[in-house]
Each structure stands twice: as structure tokens, then as C-alpha cells.
Length: 332
Length: 264
Image (cartoon, rainbow over all chains, first blue to last red; front, side):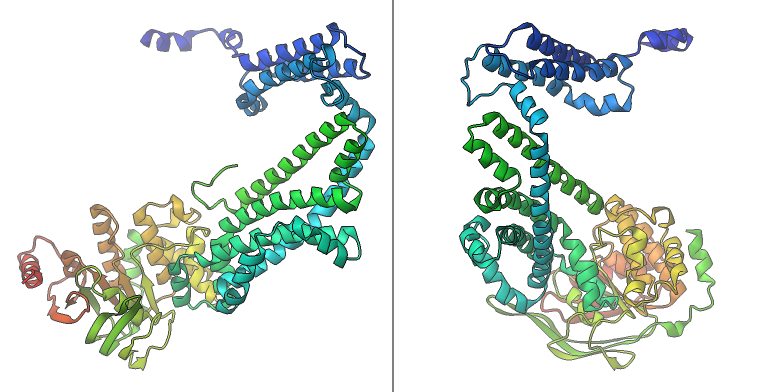
């Protein structure tokens, strides 16, 4: 051991270059992606697909930066960020290749229910316009309803958590009506509102409102009484107690409500789009199903998963900033 | 704590700063599921302005309830409580509490915690320097921007003390503020508390079940019985500050109190 320690300072500077560590998992992943691309090209499709060449190119294109990063060494920050995903980056091309072999190359999994990856790529190249439009429509329907529901839910929650009167009247209603899934209101809402859009916005708001209200109320209700005592002896007004003590102390609960509300609002969004709105990703799903366009169906599902998990990740990023004071925060 | 020595010379510290306290025939009870639980039984005493008095008694006897009544957070069932001869009807920033738990607001930095009282009274802008002054006094200037969960128990309790001192209280109510600290930190904070009291001349009421702590800090000790609490003894501590635990007079006083507390 000591011999190594002594030898290190005397080693020539060139040694640093020769021992630059290679990110071995990254290198393996790059090779597997190249292999997957080669397999796509070398093994002819059972019935030729239009985007097989592009699919191979896509896989080679992913291999290139991985190869560069792994050879450039583990010292790069980008490499450091990707490193934990190393085994996923190897498994992904293997799974995609297996999927392709079972579908396009051998037909073991039958069409039209099991489209190959290149057909989903084809959906993205040939139907991009409609998909983008659907995403825009979905967001335009989701976000106003979600924010309105979150805002009202927060206000109701603070009132019910703070005031005995509001709790007496509000709490039973929340408990009685809250468990109803917002989608159950769909027929009623479509009847009362002038259009499917406004009805859906209302229902998305409703689905967000309940969890946010219930959790905000429980958060305000469970604030340590000592926090109020301190503020009261220091001369705090009622408004100070609510704004500067109750609300910040309840925020961890509020964010759980916002998270649950977001999940509920996704469900309502998709059902509303399928039932009456005639636009957005939910509508796209139903349209694709009507034409037995399974590749479009899976393509839209993948986009939906990316969109929704992205929104949740965004919410958690906001929470991590707002609740940075919390110790031992639960990560998502 | 060099800052402390400096503040000792502050001329504004006058003996008239503290509030006097009058407690007259106070009884109190809590409503429980099974009925009324009496906690205070006909308690009367007076505290002079600027005095340091310890309320000594077994855990859970009702001493803390008495402090809450003095702070104005709760009102007594029977009897009267006054400060400077004026009846206490509610909380006021001139009478401030420090709890056993620091109860710092975890979403506020140390500096922001200290500033709460200035904020509630709307004088934060006018007295901005006040927070820094107290941060130095309690030795937390290096931790001004730390969050409460980053503090040790002793530092958190210093911050809690600082949060009330910022408001220049005339009556400081200490509810076993050092009870959860390790022995070494407790000794340090006892000394600092004493210095701050000597410098600022507010009236101090310390609730404790630690006989030594009462003897180290207080000029007078009121000994309470088990619940419902009554005053069973009153005893002056005629020793000069700083007091030494191995001083024969100190040891004798401790023996005297302890023998009186022994179960009969």
C-alpha cells in the first residue's frame, strides 16, 4: 500500500491520460444499440415496413453520443448524470430488439394487435401534426381546470382547517361528496354546461379540488399548537396566523393533495376527451381504436406517459424548491 | 461570548425595565373526558420587577399551566393575575414564553425566526439592526441563514431565546427551556441566560424540576406540590452570582430543598 502512495507523485504526467477511466456500462450500451440497429437492417422484415431503415438509423444515432461519452471518460458531468441509468441503457435496446424480432422479423406476435417498433416510429413521422395538436388540446383543457381546482381546493381547505364554522358545514360535504369519482358527474355536467369543453374543465377542477381541499384542511388542522402560541404571544394578528403560520406549516400536506389531484385530473381529462370533447390525446386514442390503428394507439400512449410523468416531475421539482426547508423529504 | 460583556455596559438596561407580577388566589382546571382535572389550587404570590424567580416542582404538577396563564395565552378559572398591577387579559409581546421545545418555524431561517416579533408588530423595517444585535448576543451570527433542522439542540434553544429577546420583553417566562439539552450545553446556557438577565434586567420566571438549576439562577424559589399545585415552600437564595455548585452554602440549600421534597 505504502509503495503505491510513494510511487504516485513520481509517475509521469502522461500516465493520467492512459488511465483515463472508461465508462464501461456506457460502452456496452453503445455496442448493444449498434447491434440492435444492425439486427434491424440485416434481418429482413416478414412484410417490409416503411420505416425499418429509419428505425435502424435512430438506434445508431443513440449509440453515437453514448460511445463518445463512455470513451471521453467518467469525469464529464453529463456522464455522471447518465451513469445511474447505465443498466437501463443496455436493457432498453435488448427489449426493443426482442419486440422487433417477435413482431416484424418472425411474426410470432400477430398483427394488428402487436405492431413492431418501426411502425410506431412511422406514426411519429407521418402523423406528427395530429399528435402535436392533440397534446396542445389536452394541455389546454387540463391546465386551466387543474389550476382553478387547486386554487379553490386550497382556499376551501384553509377555511375548513381554520374556522370551526367552515369545518362544521364544509367537512361533511367533503367527506360525503369527495369520494365520488369526478367522472361519475360526467353525464350531469354535460347536461348542465353549455359545451363539452366547459363541462370537462369543471370536472377536471372538481377532481383536483377534493384531494387538495381535504389535505390542506388536514394540514392546517395538524399544525403544532406551539407555533400558534409563539406567534400569539408575539402579537400576531389572525391574518398573520393564517398566512405566515398555518399555510406554510400545511404546505407539505398541500403538495400531497396537488399530486393526488394531478393524477385524478389525468383520468378525468382522458375520459372527457373520449366522451365528448373530440380533441386531445384521449380522443386520439379512441379514434385510433375505431380504425384498429394499434400502432397509433401505442404511439399515443407513449406520448401520454411522457406528458403525464413530465407534469408530475415538474410538480415535484416545484415542491422541492418550495419545501427546501424540510428535512428528510420524500423523493419521487 | 464577548458580545455579552459589551451589552452589560449598555446604559438602557435599568432596573425599572422588568414587570412586577401579582398572582392572587388562582385556581385552574382542565376539562377532560372524565370530568374536571384540577391543576392549580389557590396559588398566590408576588414577583418584584427585575426579579429572577424559579417555580420548582415535580413534572406535570401544573407549573407550566401557571406560565401559560402569566403569558395570557389562557385565562384562569378563578383568581386574578396582574402585571404591574394591571390585570392580564391576553397575550402581549412584553410577556414572552420560551418552551422546552424550541418550536422554531422550520420554514424560516434563524434570522427570519428572530424577526417574527418585529414582523407581527410591523416594525421590521424600522428595527432591522435589532435582529443582528440579538444574533450576536445569543452567539448565532454565523448561523443566521441556517434552517432550524440544521441546528443542534443547544443552538435551536438559543435561537428560541433570541426570538423573544428581539422584542425586549419585560417578563421572560421560561418553561424548562434547558430540559432537553445535554448536561454540558445546559451549563453553558445557564451561564449565558444569567448574563443576559443581569444585563437586561427583565423579570424572569423559570419553571424547572431541577433543584440545582433553580439554585444557580434564581433569587427566590417557590416550591410546588404535586398536582393540583400549591405553593408548599418559599425560599430566598442569598448567594452572589455567579454561583458555584461546590459552594458549601449552595450544597446546604440543595440538601434543604431536597429533604423537603422527599416523599413522606
